[in-house]
Image (cartoon, rainbow, N blue to C red; front, side, top):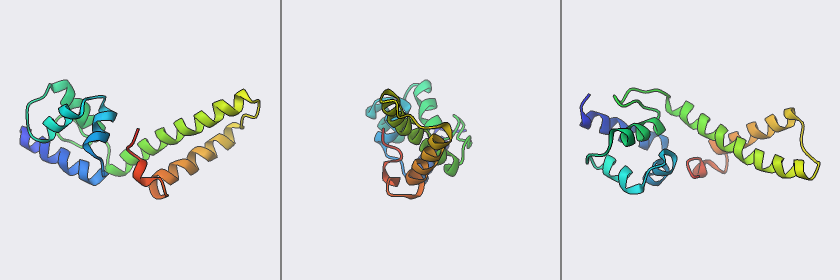
Length: 126
């Protein structure tokens, strides 16, 4: 696969997933400059390109590892689990922790808000 083909695939995926360069940089643990260089077609380290494509659900050849829907669902579940765990940790300290079944319901409801609710625009924010 050529560099241009990979770049086209990455740009298309970025647009489909509604991600910004800043989102990608944070999720890939790279600088904004590195991500900007990648998307402008400039040379970057292979390991950095791999991090960027992985965040986008692609491999280094531009093949889809995760479709956009799955990519979004995975991110929504990660964020929802994190947020609920913060609340649960605080509640546990106060001896008011929730049962596992209640925690799972909260995670599912929070995930839904990231996918189709009022928090959609914050899905890719850290």
